[in-house]
Length: 426
Image (cartoon, rainbow, N blue to C red):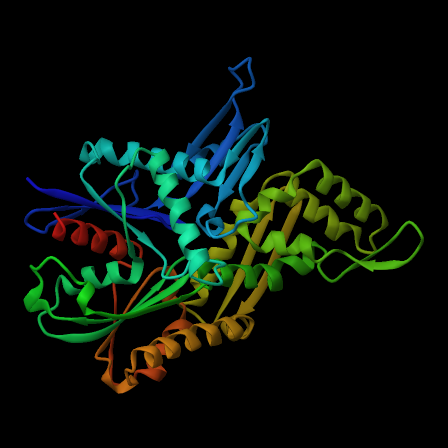
């Protein structure tokens, strides 16, 4: 039986789907979940005399991190670095890894897990990509990111990979159950980017091989779930860890605690980089002369105990809660850190107002570039975790008053659409 696969490699979560000749689609299962956390955990192998490292990915990485007796290294959001020419490699304990190495390790782990369910994955594979990768300034940056991603997939044994914009893939999934023609705006909100495609869908052609001639235009912006998380960290957590406080220099001059420390704190994929000997010595020096030493103590605890993932869980919980209610409590109690704060949805929406404006501007730009009026759009299909955020949904409810707004399978629709596209190209 003909089969094809679609892989949505995400900043935060990844998903893989199989499409068979009868167009039935099946998602890979990773334990009890249909998504694979895009995360790596390195630790020193206690059984090795040569100082080798042990590395695990996905759900195993989280378990190893939570159960670790000795400090390890948690690596997250590797996709966000693909367009950065400044990040070529990193040191993990006594070994050096390129970005392509790290992503390749994660993909090999995901592949092995999926092959236990589906068998060999050497069949046709289509991989999702953002319209514009996080941090890009021009087409050359996007091309650079794609080639790095292609190399990472090659490192995992995938030699012939085709890439498809993620919102276009979601359009394939959406069209699968459509019974009439629609001009649809696909809105895909990931961990690192928000991507949009304007697609004229014609279900009567659903068995043909191509959707590309129906894609009117694509656009995207490097703002999504991780950005919203960072705003919650900055306003809820960072002030209690020393942001905005002062310390005395060795000459008695009053100086602010460096802001760059909290920029690392706000970005999950930077947090592990704070835990270097140089940075820890700096934090201890600042703590010695700090006007609020207890706050710097808490920051040192967070970094030294590698509590980034636990902090992420608490931030994610309050963000999800604010999608359902007007006020929620933020709770974080680990090691010597205890934070209890109440936060209103209105405050959160104020903190992310600039980002909401940038997303709105991206949608407006797409419509203008496609010469399509708001009134011509029949439906909005929203996917991705941040599509649950009320301020995000409000963009489309206000702008597209006559369009139907639909959502579903927010974390897996891209993978399913990729698999259907791969099947159509067999």
